[in-house]
Amino acid sequence: MQLESIIGLEIHVQLSTQSKMFCACDNRNELMPPNTAVCPICLGHPGTLPTPNEAAVRAAIKLGFALGCTIAPRLKFDRKHYFYPDLPKGYQISQYDEPICSNGSFTFDGKTVGIERAHLEEDAAKSFHGVGGETLVDFNRGGSPLVETVTRPDFRTPHDAKSFLQEMQLLVRALGISDGDMEKGHMRCDANISLRPVGDETLYPKTEVKNINSFRAVERALEYEIRRQTELWKDGTAPAVSSTRGWNDIEMKTNEQRTKEAAHDYRYFPEPDIPPFLIGPLLEQCRRDIPELPAAKRTRFQEEYGFATQDARQLIADEALANYAEQVVSEFFEWVRSSAPDTDETELKKKSAKLISGWLLTKYLGALNDAGRLFTPDTITPENFAEFLTLVYLGKLNSTTGQRVLKQMIETGADPSQIIETEHLGQADGVALDRWIAETIEENPEQIEQFRSGKTAVLQFLVGKVMKKSRGTADPEEVAVQFQEKI
Ligand SMILES: [Zn+2]
Image (tube, rainbow, N blue to C red):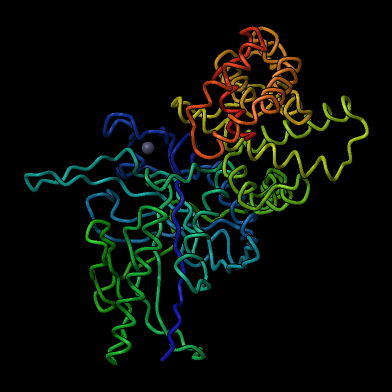
């Protein structure tokens, strides 16, 4: 029997607003001492009244638009009841029958995912279980704004589910509503999965997998569930009721937490302290605030600048880097057009994409990484980087001297022409060096033959010849490198 997997995701995104969902407490409270970002409202003291945070509402509307959802004309909150120490009111303010966003459809990289709903709610506090068996609660996170997005069961592979989750991270970052950092718990994911025989249209009881804290874990947890449930189907004991399981990243398996019979009854009812209110006036503003979305930007980078798929993906993943690349490309085009006006545009596009890929993504980011530094647009200005690429493009810098200039640019921030002048790395040297090497190759056929047949020690002799021709101005290391490239 051929089985297929039916997968849906529930994704919680913590919104990066200044204050919490229903009170003025600082929402950037992770690093604050425990229980300092709290007030009578988020601690659920009697007689206090919640006030919805407009920034959080706007963030949810923007996400809804980006996911192709319908936005509800009015905002209605409900109480979801359960008892746990991290929930001082004994209920969570959430949205039940009128989610702010519903019925969406989101397309990326040629795949379309249905979005059932996305709703606003407040986060619970954080519990810490001590070694002595005691439980400590930090209420700083309690009341932070969350948007929970529920997809339709449209994924057929763990990889597709992971890709969507990664796209969600890019999306919330592009919208500026969250950093979507899974390791910090700013984006959390539960995955629902069931199997069915191929061709069967029934949706069988699903298993909800919780405690997924990384992109890798989503894929692994789902792969584990597919193996486990495939065995059950083979044995004729496919899950007959829905259940909840927890992913254990160390044991690399899921463990049963509860089955449907023991599921919570949350006794939802409308939140009496926040009467529903109309949000129509916010919609148009929110729509205008939506920037170019990552999937569209990737396509544009490929079509407009000729970037390869993987390069476009890498650039778009970091907004600052993407903006930087766009500035560099546009400056580079300017430089080349003014210094070599007869350049063919198609050719120029192709070459610039290749240059950016090699020099920006590989060498520059690699050098920064080696130095333990992060990319910032100010280390080398886009103008200087574009000038540098132009020099490489026009053959005034070769790969070796290029890397030396780049290193200096990172260290000093100086423009490339200045570095070439002070370091004597310029065109004359490069051209002269090429000539000296060519002459040396021609004048010493015997040694060249020896080198080709594996006697690498002869390289020193050849380098010495070039050093003599250059009267010592050439860089012996570079001469050696160039010999190896040329022979
Ligand atoms: Zn508060």
